[in-house]
Image 1 (cartoon, rainbow, N blue to C red):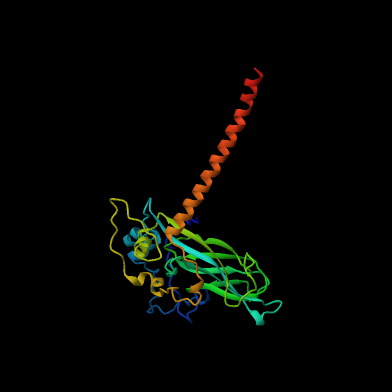
Image 2: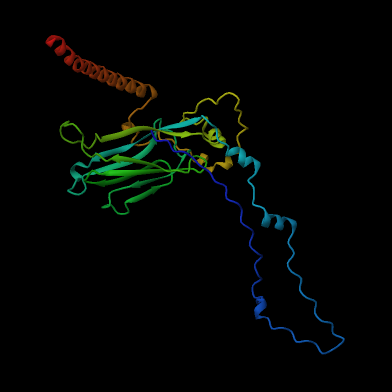
Length: 307
């Protein structure tokens, strides 16, 4: 199960640059020195004073900037807390039928979606799909939901899918890999243009020790699995919505044109699969133990017979 972990850094503010010189004003080196006046009644020009810095400018030059107190609170980590987002990634491919040619037999779509078909842009900033090098511009970047792309071709290959998250979610990327399938695994008769080949993978993205700001932003989002906070932790009221502009771009996939082919993944189904897998493993362990006990008992029986 992928578990990206966030990290943060706060660089010190650099000293402000000196004020720019007005346009058309020559530099001091280019100005010729004025000739000394021979008239005793003409006073000498006073020396130009150096630039005066205000107290605020001096403070900026000598002290690094400190983040506001509110920023410190929002970046505070919630220990022993995990936020998870169930996701599904895969491909749906259609045979082109009479329109199929030797080098263009199928049209397919690769995607990353929420397991509940909710909007993933609450955490995902962009998705990069790496196609086969034979495609024109094989590196495709999708920055708006739905995070998908459609192409056509004739061959099967592995697609690399890279997820980049918003800055308050995680600074690390998440790499996924999916094998494009154009033909069904089992022979189900002749190909049909109406029944696609669907291959999907269920997984969960887990964010350990999230920041308070991230927790508050997604605690009521339907795509997130958010636990109860440990006793004693009280969060401040959430900030204004304008601080998280990506929240405004909520788009659901429930009306997606391919949604009828999406697999239904639920927590109950996953628990049943885990229980069945656990029973299978336990049965194999019991079988191996019986075989080992039989092997261990064979020399003892031979010794007792020979004695």
